[in-house]
Every structure is written in structure tokens, then in C-alpha cells.
Image (cartoon, rainbow, N blue to C red; front, top):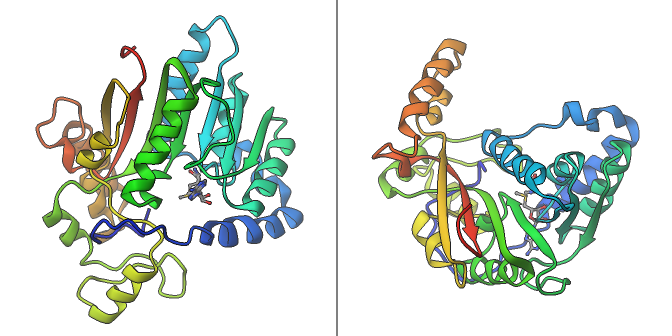
Length: 286
Ligand SMILES: C[S@@+](CC[C@H](N)C(=O)[O-])C[C@H]1O[C@@H](n2cnc3c(N)ncnc32)[C@H](O)[C@@H]1O
């Protein structure tokens, strides 16, 4: 998420194997030495993922049959594992072969009944109408605009009639805010996900050339809906961006309290939030 930039949207697929190298290959080595760090209690979920998990839990509880869920870009498989633990039949798909190996190991260790398949979300190896739900956590913003459209059309194809697709994604709806945010460097210059300041001209250009993700907007996510009947947004994090300026517990609590109002569905400025939970309905909204 720290790699978001105000880069122009293009149609080029960027190399997506950084995650496989950093979070696949390297974490397989970590797991061999310290397996307990991959126990469910030690796995972390964002606020939007926690909300998504409770939405899915409610759907599981209200269904008379076992729900079948597909996790787009499943990575290390944490979210798939949490959904499987709720009782769903979960399949995770990711292009990274080491990530698939790691996800299988983490699922086995946590006794979660899910399957992981290596594949591309732009060309799914599944039949039409196989799944009740498609989910994706921070995946669409790694694709070019045509990739977002084609993966959503694949999601539509594999969903049963009345099925739903949910994505948690970072967004940038305001170029000025985007610029302000990019003034402050993020992370450690030695790390692969370091983001320099937009004022450091050559470092910024290099960062943009190498970034494997980009800024998405509500407008793009709405326009990419294809045959889905409707789209709904829920917003997360606005003033919390400022916590970087002063590392103080009470300041962070204050920013979170302010965000409860600014990101509320009725807030007139909620589109300025930093991330969304976007829902695509194949049938009527439920
Ligand atoms: C930002 S990571 C998110 C991983 C996971 N969903 C999570 O929340 O931790 C994006 C993931 O998408 C995968 N990915 C990127 N492009 C893909 C594609 N076209 N098909 C399948 N997986 C893809 C990457 O390998 C990576 O694991």
C-alpha cells in the first residue's frame, strides 16, 4: 500500500513477482525456522478486511449450504484461511508459485480447509457460476486499467447468479491530496517498498518506473463494473494519514475518532479516504 503514486494510468502490466520474492520465497525460509509466527493469532487484518470478514460471516450464517469463495491474488493466504475457519469452502488463486507453497503450509499448520491454485485472475481456470463469492484484498490496484476490467469480468463469469464480489483497495480520488501525501517519503530507503518524496525528482521517477502498483479511483472502479448490476463503496482512513507527522498514541486515537465521522457513509467528504471496500452485485443488493 505504501507504493501508491499519482502515476498516470497506463495499459502496461507491471512485473508482479516482487511479492513472490519478498513474501513468498523469503517467508518460506522464515517459516522453516519459526513456524509459530504463522499461527492465526499472529496474522494481521486491516480494518476493511475485518469488516469484510464479518460481512462474509453473516452470509455464511444465513446460508443453508456451504458457501464457495474464490480469493483473488491470495498472497500468503491469510484472508482465505480466516474465511475457511468460518466454515466456507475457499479457493485462493495467485500468480506466485512460492506464495502458493507458503499459503498451503500456513493453511495446513492452522488446520484450515482451503485450496490454493497458481493462476492468473485475468484468465481464471474455473467454470462459469462456480462460486457464491469472489473476494480480493489489495489486488486490483496492481493491474492496468484493462486488467481491472478483465479480472472483474472473470469474477462475474465465475459467480453464481446473485453472487457478490468484494475488494478492499487503496484509492486516490483527489489529485491535490495525492500530491500532499506524496511530499513525505515513506519507509526505509533500503527496503523494496520505499517511496521517496515527489520533490526528489530523479528518485521519484525511478520509483514510478519500478512501482508494481498505482492509484485507483472510485470512477475507475465504477466504470470497470461491466455486467455487474450495481457497485457500492465503504470508506476507510482519511486523517489517519497524518499520524506519520507525530508518532504519539493520543494523536493517533484522535485521528481515528475524527475518521469515524469523515469516512461515514453520510459524510460529504468520504471519497477523500485512503481505501475502500467495494462491492459488486451480480443480482439485487442484499
Ligand atoms: C498486494 S498483494 C496482496 C496479497 C493478499 N491478498 C493480501 O492481502 O495479503 C497482491 C497479490 O496479487 C498477486 N497478483 C498480482 N497480479 C496477479 C494476477 N494477475 N493474477 C493472480 N495474482 C496476481 C501477487 O502475486 C500478490 O500476491
